Length: 313
Ligand code: GDP
Ligand code: MG
Image: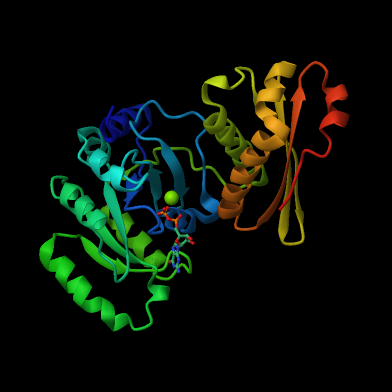
């Protein structure tokens, strides 16, 4: 189902009310390393809301939602558009990848300020066929000493292509990001919020933490993933400027526990590291994460054996 169809469906399900806001789907695209993830984290900040149930109503994986009283911005993943190096370009030619961004409301095309590579060019060429507003972002301007050096690049690109806007910014420092948000909101259609406006509470942060651990487990284990696996946040406390998070991974059998832990604890360690990095980005704080694996029935035995599997870096 397309986003438009999803929106229509949700509109008819909801009572009519005057509380319409700019609400819509946003794709952030660009070659690897230009700063797409940094930008999304910067925009979402604490306002991230990860949807546990992957919505069946859209073709996209939702990466994050920013709900404010002004708007609802739903950031979607664009598989095949920003993973890998040269090969990405082959996949770019892929109809499916193009389709996946054809029905978003806004595309943010990120490049590195002062640079223009073949890969950037390929992405630009594919965008010509897509009738969605595109904002071109020249990221990492904090690395450019003389900002006027960017003017020829901006002029050249704007002469070449119909961008809705060309904007220099720094995702890392947050420079111009608020301005970007305003521009995006102006391009979103009005509707009732498409997703619940999850308040940022301690509870939702706990939920996000559990989801991140689950996501990493799923990514690492794939088919091997024990079917009955649950993640429970046992500890979630602020210690100074740091968050101390303890998570229990519940499995049903010893064999499953071994799979999750991996050789010499390597599996669990990798999962923990990836989850911690994401948590630090999302929560904007240093995180001390401890993971434990427990078998549901005999958890008391396991506790002693697994003490020490938690780690920090
Ligand atoms: P992605 O592959 O496009 O998602 O890129 P990332 O968001 O992972 O960023 C790649 C690298 O560029 C990371 O080391 C970021 O810290 C860095 N980076 C991102 N945005 C900026 C920025 O505005 N300024 C600087 N100096 N570095 C940035
Ligand atoms: Mg990224």
